[in-house]
Each structure stands twice: as structure tokens, then as C-alpha cells.
Image (cartoon, rainbow, N blue to C red):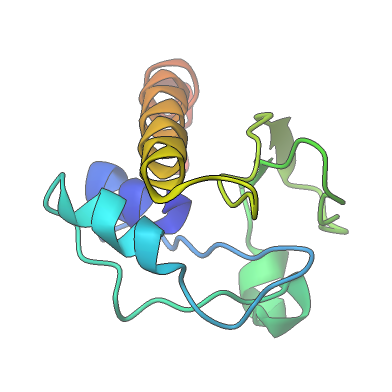
Length: 129
């Protein structure tokens, strides 16, 4: 969801990729639904690890943003400015279908607000963008 939101909000002129510490290899169906609700299609995305990212991408990072809360956060060994936005994983095996839908909507909305703040605080003052 974060990659889809960031690409939609920040535009194609930015090289945006997301990666996790324990990727499943696929985008959760409820993430697709939550993003469809706001007109962003993430069906062609897939979950990947930081090891799946190109070295040239890692070497040219300006920002590395982590979204984890209780799980292990990936570490990017680079001089990029690191930001940590705590977000709980929306997947919970004990949630009902309605709770799961709400959880993904809440996570999507939280990430949207954080990206908006990021854009206002960082991007508007960052000369290389």
C-alpha cells in the first residue's frame, strides 16, 4: 500500500520501491481492496525483501522509510535519511472479515497522512527532488 500511495502522491519522477523484512511474495487481497477504494490499483505490485532491491537503487536513495511496529524492521545499509513511521501490520489472524477490512483502511489512511506530512516537511525542502 505504501508504494502505491507514494507513487500516486509523489509522481513518476521519483524512484519509489517498498520492501519488507519478511515478504510473503504477494500483495494481500485486502490491501488491493483498500487501495481500489481510493482509485489506486496495486495488483501488479508484489511484496519483496530489501535483498530484492537493485544495488543501484539502494546506492542512490535519498530517504529510507520504515513502517514497522511490532515486527522486525528492515535495515538499509546506506547514507539515506532514515525515517521510521510506526504502523501496526494490518494482518491479524484473529480479525473478522470486517475487522480486517477496517484494519487495512486504517493503515492506508495512516500512511497517506504520513506521506502528506513527509511531502510538506521533506520533499518541498529537498533540493535533489
